[in-house]
Length: 174
Image 1 (tube, rainbow, N blue to C red):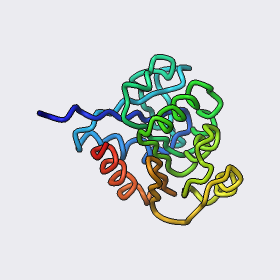
Image 2: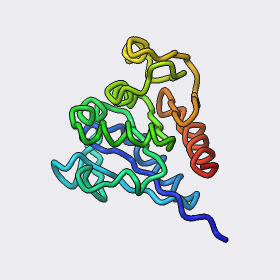
Image 3: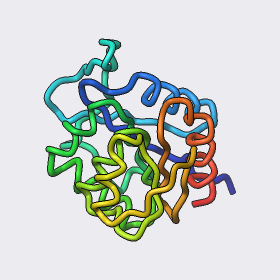
């Protein structure tokens, strides 16, 4: 019997870090994992920090947590906007509590803090927000990628190859 196809959400808002959206999106698709890009519902197309556009597949208001095996929270300044939406915060928290993959890179850790899922977890992030994760009770380490149960974190675009490898491994194991 064939395993059901896995499905990952990537959260998007304006000022996203271009590589931290597009690299995982393309690599996961190559691995046979379905990817759905989800925006906050303000519009259908969002621009990266450099202005590179992405048209999202759906909005957070239409997304169902039960449809996904995990979520990726890219960095840039988008996470500071994403965390202002209760639906986005609840989506991430529910996936985490259900034991599904929650992966954040760079400034994506801000959304983990808002979701209240950092306490007692080993995490990494872009160094500029490490104090935020520590203040939220996380155990910060400066590593390329950190996997703590169903939580995966990385620091910066250069870490993307290992970050995405760990996401694929964890999603395929679930």
